Length: 553
Image 1 (cartoon, rainbow, N blue to C red):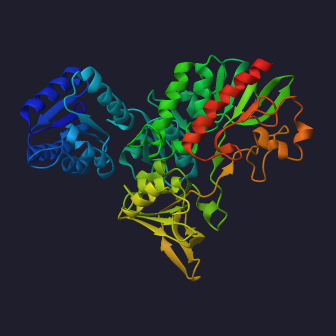
Image 2: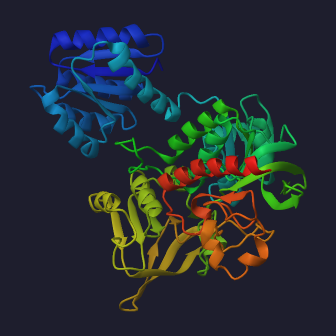
Image 3: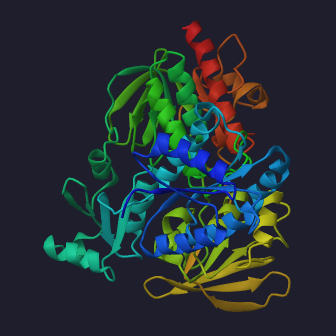
């Protein structure tokens, strides 16, 4: 396979020559630039490219062409190369059509004519789109390979960890993959060795722990200092924002994450209401950008590591990790977010990791090809998962206890779901039991209105219900509400125990807990808005209060 392709089409030969010239001048070392003035010729070429296994990175199409409008061409091109980025070349009068195309064909960008100078009006936009495409582009694979059984909880854990840390890998099913069988034979692997992970340098790890994998892929599993200005616990949107602002403002900053950065938002296939991204962005892409930004400013990341407790020593906070090691900090920001609530229904626990998953739609979606899958939950995360799964599965069924999705899901997602042919919402429905042999094979459902019970075949179930804060480990005398969310700010003054705990002369800062110098931000905090934007805002704001606290000690 040759270089990835930038494909341009415009019926105006003068414009076509100009765009081809500028693209070749800037991208010829890493991409092939192909162009045509004919839609029919373009479609024939694209079919040939697909058959030869070539990859198109970006389509750049004129909007007004005699054979076909650009939006319609992009819609047809998407069928052949669904992961290519899509750019519409427009005149000023066509901007309304371009904006409409954002929703109709998932347009990534519209480029105004003329684009002179290209250094300002062409290359920055195309560079950004190519970076995004490259983040998901998978050429002939030479990286990490994971070999195991599809319905193995341990295999799922490893895949989820690698995906969450934005590490590309190839999954090879030990039972059905011919490439996997060859690797098994040459490495003398046995069923007890699965899952096995083979790294690019040839190292083979059998049933490895996540920390073993982390050390191989270059994640930092050990700290470099013993005292930090601020330690942030949890690398969701709030934690990543806090780490960016903390490090950029000169604080020695350590970010501790027990699984993978991004939190629940990081698993979202598409966040469409995040300010500044009119075409939306995936949770993985938001996480990648934030992690890169934090690293650029000097944030140290400790992952995967769990915090067992926080102890106070004079005015220092001592973070105790699961392995017993200790790290000291002057201030702490807790941004551990929430976990999906566990479903106690019969059979769910037995098949968790064996066809039943909490979140993880992006990790297991590719295994759902031409299958019937179910999504339990009516929030935005469930809706985004359903939309993503619909690209792979034969049918996607969304199970909710209420009549419909209107009370719990954003309207833009409801509209997308209603316009997707292979998604069906099962309102007033509940799961009675999960059934199967060694993996999920079916569900027993009940209609809450009529009491009618029925059994349906199910190849996978993705659960997105409730929000349980990850605060069981939080000790000291940090006040929490009845649901386990951390109380902060002046709201704590109404708590009956506040006067016994808080001994400072001042009131608590807005995001400060009942333990001075320990702050909470994002979904883990009582009263939080449970939105990515608000979590980012709180994480950023927490550093302002950290500065105020550090000026006191």
